[in-house]
Image (cartoon, rainbow, N blue to C red; front, top):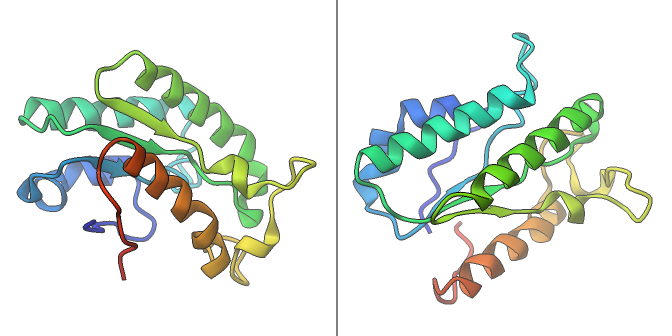
Amino acid sequence: VIQRGFGGAQISHIDHYRARIVLPYDPRAVVVMAGEADLSDVRGRRPEDLLDDFRTLALSLRAEGEDAPIYFVSLRPAPAREERWYGQQRANALIADYVRGEKEMYFIDVSSAMLDDKGNIRDDLYRWDGLTLNGKGYETIGPIIRQRLIDAGYGALRPSR
């Protein structure tokens, strides 16, 4: 597992830097965990814009010969951005629907595990800012992602440090 993420990354940023952060590594799988910042910026982006950006990223990777499976990790709810959760849910649904119709693209839902039994965002998974996951947050979503990749045949993955 090679983590190439950077804080506040938007999907369009990943597409822009794909030649540096994805392609040189000849990955067996590409896991995209971004998008919350896309819907949180001041430009008033819509869930449909996020889908378009993800589609552009996926098509760009394919056009450059990257045929590894692409996994999109669902947008995560955050207490500090609770007012944006509806739009994030819509973006999740759009992307999940899109990847269902594409070869070697998959959706990993981690957001369900981040809600309590009443559908409220779990504050205990975040640091003081209500935005950044804490250790418990990563312990909640990490195994979901890891298990999905193991089930797909990627072996016993160890968490990155």
